Length: 305
Image (cartoon, rainbow, N blue to C red; front, side, top):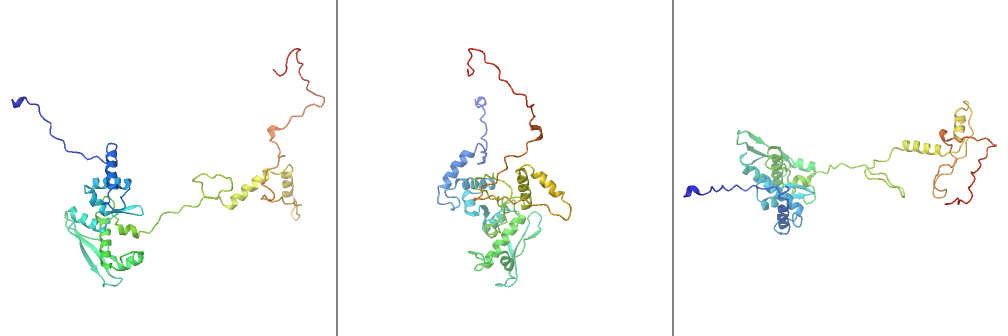
């Protein structure tokens, strides 16, 4: 009897869908709204659906709890960064390294006091060392005297936190999904954003589109202005200029009185109206005795209809 029963397919394991995929975007938005309305998430995520969407995607990619990620992934100046305690716990829990230990050198309270991370790679047994982080480095980089910094009051702990962050950047960026910078690194980072040249100032009524490059050099503008003035000179100016250039050496050509400068009193500079016509538009003279005679109008016709 049981041989005639249809076979029941085995249940398929649930497959997670990315919140940024076409099929999971709406579900991700609903989950993000729920997180944004909660007061148990940090202030960076409260009321911010966009940040909560990124939080969901990060937790899904790292296969970790959303609240655990939210408590340790902080947004400083628009950049996400992990807390140093999270970096240490992620490295220790990965199983790729032995538990983190610290090496010290220098005297406490001195600028020579320094710390580094030491651990071994479990696959090969190789001992790995992070870079040394010292009080002198913190002062040289500007971390020590920054407003609100804990370097002056919690020097030993800040040395350990920064040493963990440096070690995670070098040896474990894959564990931290490429975000190996700690919150202290981001807060202490120097802004190196390139500055753009200012756009040229627009005159009254002038439109300058976005992306216009900086103003041209003064020599180039003066050459353009001279070209515009030459085009607006009356007839004979070109001949006078040629005669002036042909003046024998040692003599000076008579100078023309300077034209008044354009401005509020004299009005804007305008080209002359009697500019020479182009050669191909020259008028053809007609015989003096030729007078055109109009065609006769037929009787009974109206010339206007």
